[in-house]
Each structure stands twice: as structure tokens, then as C-alpha cells.
Image (cartoon, rainbow, N blue to C red; front, side, top):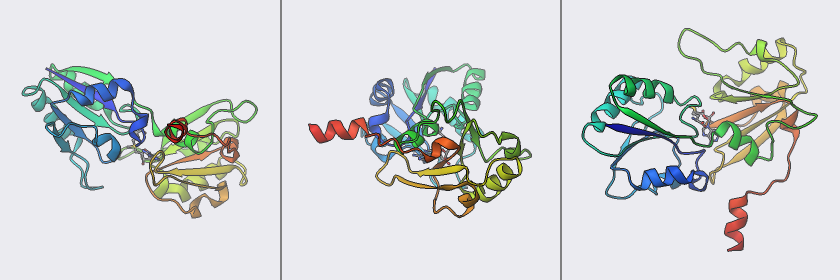
Length: 244
Ligand SMILES: C[S@@+](CC[C@H](N)C(=O)[O-])C[C@H]1O[C@@H](n2cnc3c(N)ncnc32)[C@H](O)[C@@H]1O
């Protein structure tokens, strides 16, 4: 009995790893989340059973139910793939599923994915670290589990880039806490929405404007000097397609 925990990358199927594409192509069943890109889902063979466990925001299947489903499926199919957006272990609850599976005696194989935390900024021309601008990066969620909260005041550090996931609805509170923590009101911020998809949008501003930035979920928010950079990078895949 085994399950593959596979990272689907930020959205565009071209950003899937070769291993992920191979595992998907030979899957008997794929259990996937809402944020898996449609071009990735198109790679699943028509005869493969596909189960969407994250269709409606706020009404998605509970984590325990998903783990139970994977355990059950592993008893009936040779190749069960659990497909998650980005990297399964970056705010993807991959750890919880891996633990539940191994406790049930199911072997777990992992295929890392490109996380939106890094791909998002880069596809907007923002390097998360840059000599002279930032000597580190902190990837953080704005949505901690019930009963705890992320203390952004303590994360205020002008020399470090903050990459914030699941932060769109909390951007007012995030900016207030970072300002209270001592970050300058003029600190550059950027939000990259639907990175790597046809809907990708980038909005930029200052920390004291973060609350009013015109952005919707899913988006990664970048706070720090690098957010002012726009390296004019071209997407290698787009170039290859254009020249072929
Ligand atoms: C539950 S977390 C999953 C993160 C995922 N495991 C990863 O590594 O990218 C969902 C959040 O990831 C971010 N996200 C995922 N895909 C994105 C994309 N294509 N563009 C921008 N942000 C994205 C958003 O902050 C979203 O609210």
C-alpha cells in the first residue's frame, strides 16, 4: 500500500517537475486540491479516477476525511496520487497526511513541487534575496490554526524579505503590526496574484498602502526592499514556446 504526495507547482503545468508528470501519467487515482492548475489537471489520463477534495472555499473536505480517503484508496489501487498546489509541505498540510498514512502502515513517496512562495515573486521579477537588499527570506502564513496567531510585529526586520501566504484578507492587520514592529511606512510591498497562470497580476506599493492594494486571493505578498525590484526577467518557458 502506498500513496504519492505530489507537488503541482504554482499553476502552470510547465512548472511541474518531470517526476510529478511521470507519477501523474501512471496514476490510478488522483486526489487533488482547489489550487491545482487546470493545465496540470489536463495531464491526468481520462481513465484515471479524479477526486476533487477542495472544490468550495470554506466547505472543503476535512483534513481527517482526506487522510481516511487516502488510506482507503491505497487498499484498492496500486498508484494513488495526492496532488497539492505548490509544494505539499509548504502550508499544504502534507506533513499531517504523511503522518496519518504512515501510522496506518501506508508507504509515503514524496515529489517536491515549486512553491508559490518562491515562484510567485520571481515570476513578477522579484528575487526573494538580493545582494545589498535582503540577506534572507521568511515565508510565513497569515492564517495560523485556530487558537494561535502569527505575530507580525516580531517579524519586522528591514534586512529580511517577508513572503506572506494566505494574507490577502488580513493585509490591513499585517501592515499595522509590521509598522508597530518598526518597519518604515515606505517599505516596498508587492502582491502577486494567480502567479504563473493566464490571470497573473502584480500590484506594488508601500507598506502603509498594503491594506488598500487591489488584490484578490490566491496571492503571495512580498514585503521588503526587494519588492521594489523588477528585474525584467523573461519566463524561459514563454521564450521557448515563442521561438519554436
Ligand atoms: C494553502 S496555501 C498552499 C501553498 C502551496 N503549498 C505552495 O507551496 O505554493 C495557499 C496559498 O498559497 C498561495 N498561492 C498558491 N498558489 C498561488 C499562485 N498561483 N499565485 C499566488 N499565490 C498562490 C496563496 O497565498 C494561497 O492563499
